[in-house]
Amino acid sequence: MKKFEKVPFADLRAQYLLIKGEMDAAIESVIMDSAFIGGKHVKDFEESFAKYTKTKHAIGVGNGTDALSVSLKCLGVAAGDEVIAPANSFIATSEAVTAIGAKVVFVDCNPKSYNIDTNKLEKAITKKTKAIIPVHLYGQPADMDKLTGFAEAYNLYVIEDAAQAHGALYKGRAVGTLGYAACFSFFPGKNLGAYGDAGAVTTNNDNLAVKIKMYANHGRVDKYNHEFEGINSRLDGLQAAILNVKLRHLDSWTMKRRQIADIYNEKLKDVVITPWVMPDVTHVYHLYVIQVHGDRQKLIKHLSEHGISTGIHYPTPPPFLKAYGYLSHKPEDFPVSFGLKDKILSLPIHGDMTDEQAHYVTDVIRDFYNAG
Image (cartoon, rainbow, N blue to C red; front, side, top):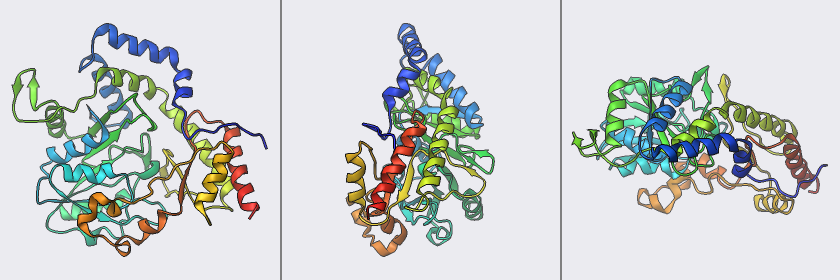
């Protein structure tokens, strides 16, 4: 077994060094142009990302959470309305709902895909439901056919939370085109990450695109012509230029992530529960999440002693966070999400990881279980 002193969970420094020339030139261009807010670099990225996601419009915003709340707001979701979200996700999904005064209604996750369980979805729909936010968790698209079927039957908006799924495909269709709108985060650790906070909304609806662009820019059509009150949530020029460089490399990084996942799948399938992938989807493995057998903390310690970083996504499902204590949820309300929280473990995976590092990770895990 080839040993490594360190296998990082992600390696943004290594990624930068590989594209340093392109990146430095892009950043210098923004500075020389003084194009820090709006301008050519933002426009170029919005057009490039719309083309990449095969949508008519991509509107840059300040971050992925704003992308969600701005989309909900511009679709008319308001106080008294309900929005369905998965019980297994990062808090940003549900936080965006309550930020505009609506009520979040959680639905448990599917035990195989970890995405929202569409078999439990219809029971959560009421007369107050206005929208559903499926999260393409860990980089795998949700069960969109069944979900959009319910949305059409009950006249609901579908807003994709695609923060972890840049480049993922559902039955040949790009994530970002599967709902009324889709929201992306470009947090630095994402598959397509900026060097700070950044986000975007994609949509094929012309009117919604105009409204989102205005709302996120103080409700204005030009510098001092404000048609309504909005907020300040803009993608800045530096982040846009950075993302434009990275977007050119995203497919190759995704291919590498999938290659690392294949190694993990093959070498770990008989010692842990490896990710299940739905038929007819392309998983982009923002995270590679296993279910461990036995004491998770002992495995984490063993991996750490061998220089391997891990993560837990997420240690507490949103319904059981203190932030949602007012909803008084119990473990039996979301048994799958609650049951997974002590079993899941995220292994290192990123576009600059080597096959040798992946083999090392699997060998260390296999040694742990072989030792009993």
